[in-house]
Length: 237
Image 1 (spheres, rainbow, N blue to C red):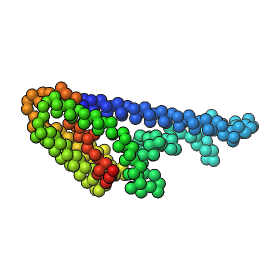
Image 2: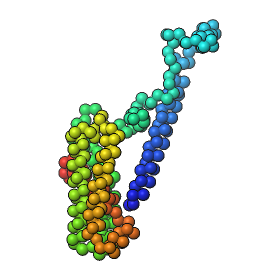
Image 3: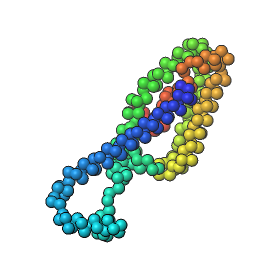
Image 4: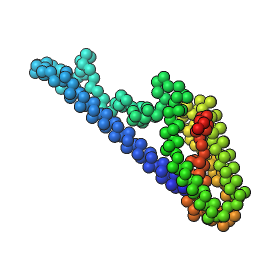
């Protein structure tokens, strides 16, 4: 996978999230209007014309409505079951992926890790096949294979240490996470991935590097999916 592919994938995911958020807000507003229309209180007999006229008279003269009259509901209010972060409303079903009330961290881990493993399993098989295919095409020797594994293991360990450091310090916790902190964390992770790629390519001959440039195998892709990140949570199969 090339950097251009990951960049385009990021844009597509961001656009999809924006569309889903917009649709969720539209559905929530429509449901609220339908519920108000079906409210039995709204089906009662209308007020006498004189009463309606007396309420509408201040508006006609440009005056403020009476203090005891409720203010109209804002159409742009976020859905009651949604989440709001940095001005963005997140669909309510996302709450299922967060720890539930009364659920401890161990129970949350046991609930989420099998789903993550099932989603990642096809990609782990894919990158393993890509590694073997490139090793055969480029005629990698035992030292070069070991260098690939060492570079990936070193980068994965450093990334895990960086994540744990951020969690223990509180910088990466949702309640304290700042955009600048997220950018710095992403930069550190990308630097570690680039270092692993350089280490592996240093062990290759010029012909092998040329073959890698045209082969689907990519060190960053292999690092992302081959590493058992769940082991950082103490998962034992």
